[in-house]
Amino acid sequence: MSLKPHAIVLLACAMALPGCATEPGDKTEADGTSENASDAVVVDAQADGETRLRRGQLLAIALDSNASTGYAWEIIEDGRPVLESAPVPASAAPAVPPMPGAGGISRWRYRAAQTGTATLRLVYRRSWEQGVEPVRTATYRVVVE
Image 1 (cartoon, rainbow, N blue to C red):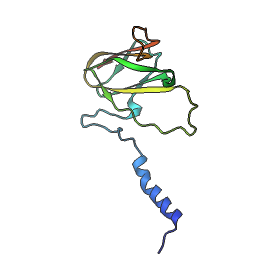
Image 2 (spheres, rainbow, N blue to C red; image 1 turned 135 degrees about the vertical axis):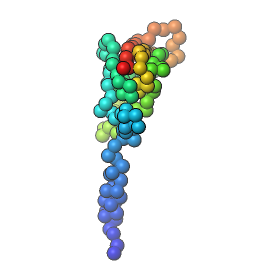
Image 3 (tube, helix red, strand yellow; image 1 turned 120 degrees about the vertical axis):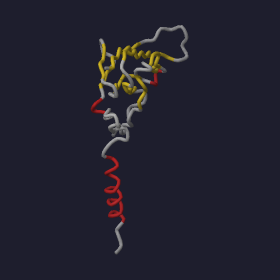
Image 4 (cartoon, one colour; image 1 turned 30 degrees about the vertical axis):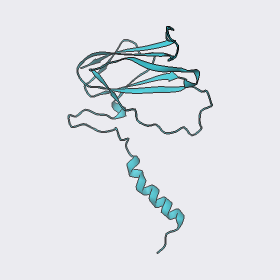
């Protein structure tokens, strides 16, 4: 029996689909902590006050940015040792590519590694401009219980 080319493509797609069911980072650790994106606390530039997390929970930061202007977010305080950097899941490419020069979103994720209080501080500036105040600053106080 010979398979037609389109049947082979359909069969290959059907076999690949189960691998797409979860992101590689979505799992539960042996100690019961979760890396699932739905368990993440998402904050943006307007976040005010303090953010409370449970140990093992994720903090996701999303800030507007536009690399075509030369500006970029720089991490000044990273919250260690209370917080540790976690990989940001890959996102699907947009159906329509953005316009050249259009802005976007910069993303970071941190895992609450141990109890305590941490500060995350990011500044938005051009790396080559020395002695110039950043145009934006984002500061987050995080309490891990």
